[in-house]
Structure formats: structure tokens, C-alpha cells
Length: 322
Image (cartoon, rainbow, N blue to C red; front, side, top):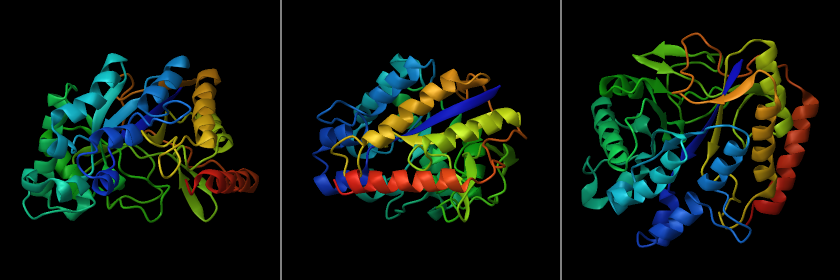
């Protein structure tokens, strides 16, 4: 059996909030969380619809930092529908919100895009604050974390251990120049205890010039299906996949990206229809040290890679500018 973690990084956009103004919370919500379009929503509600149709539960890494600007109610609006439908909530954190938090910034004068820009003591404070806001919004105590932009370092893992969060999923071996600063290598794709926290790497496959991470916008359905089947053939117990609350929209977040939306739907159906594969969460199927979390040894296929590049070119041509 291969357990598939469909993880959804769920976040208001700090960039949109800055550009539109802090009075525009509802618009930021509709363009980041529910993802309203003329042809229907494609955000977290739609993603849950699709996963539930195929018997899956998602793992929603929710960023509570916008509570510094808009209060706990803004986070409750995200948390409540996820909990009501029985999906899992874990902790996400984008420190960018400190820059626009004003007097609510718990670290006066300190800002940064990534967790690794802060000391271990500062990271402990940020994690405790974020967890508190998440739980005030109605979520249970999180057991797993993913840094915004994957921007964690070893100090993040030590800070997580200090605040009692058992798992991290910020190591992304499929991005050679990611924001992650955890001292693990691209070849480290197994669950491992590192700096007191259990690290659950994002899945990756071999591709042009190295590896490519298992994200809905980064791999074609063909590649993800091949990776899943490879996991089953090799008895890899986990396949850890990333998506975002806004990932099925175009870049400017005004309309749906039909190509990415169809890819998400097809892969959820593939998981359901593949014998030996099953959607899972940290609670229903906890990761175990030593388990491989992706299809790292899937031989590179020039045909699959080329087909994905062609599909992405079409997607960017149609949806990249609007």
C-alpha cells in the first residue's frame, strides 16, 4: 500500500493584501482561499469536493499569520469549512505578514520572507503565536508544519521540537535552488529524524537536469501517475504531494486554469482507481522514520518530460498573462 498525502498550502496572499489594501480582506479571501471565478469556485471548497468524490481526505497546511492584520475571524473562515468536512488541518507560516502587521508584529522591527531569516528563539515565538491563532480559530493542536516558501532551516526544526510539533514537511529535494535551508541533500527523500523533528520530504522524480518536485503545477498527470505506479512497484509507502489553495487559478487569480484543474481532478481519480494506493493524512497514517516519500528512483523519461514541458507552454500561453 502507498499512502498519498495530498497537502494543500492554504494561505491568504500577503502580496495581494499589500497591493489591494488591508480593507480588501474579502477580495483577498476570494482570490486566495475560495478562488471565485465566473465558472465557479476552484479553491479549497472545490478541492475538497474533488477529493471527497474519490474517497480522499486532504491535509490543509493553514497559515494563521493574517490574524495579525484581520483578527482570528479571518482564520476561522478558512478553518471552519475544512473541519466541518472532516479534512486535516496542520500549520503553515508565512513571515511576510510581519511587514504589514504594524503594532501587532510580535517581533518589533523584524521582518523577513522566510523562517530561516529569524533566530531560533524568534522562530519559537512565531510558531507559538501562529499555533495559538490557529487553535483560537477552532483547529486542533497541529502535529505537522510546513514553512512558507519551504523557507525553513535547522533552527526551524529545533524550534518545532521545542513547541511540541512532531513533523515538518519543508524539505523539497525536487527544487535544487529552493528557499529551504535544512541541512539535508537532494538525495534525502526518506522520512528522517533531524534536529529533533521528524522530516517528511516532499516527493520528487527525476527529470531534465536533475529532479522535479511533486507539485500539481510542476508535474503532468502522466508523470504523477507514473510516479505513483513506481512507488507501488518499489513498495514505497508514501507519496507526498503539494498543492495550494489558489493553485487551480491563473497567475493573476481572476479565472480558473482549466489545464491545472483537470490535472488535479485526473490525479485524484487515478489515486482512487489504482490498486494499492490510498489517500491519507498524518492522523490516519502517520509517517515512519526510514520510509521513502516519493518516486526518487523513477527513471527519467524524456518523452514524459517533453510532454509536460509542452503542456506547460500551452498553459502559460493561455493562462500566464491573465
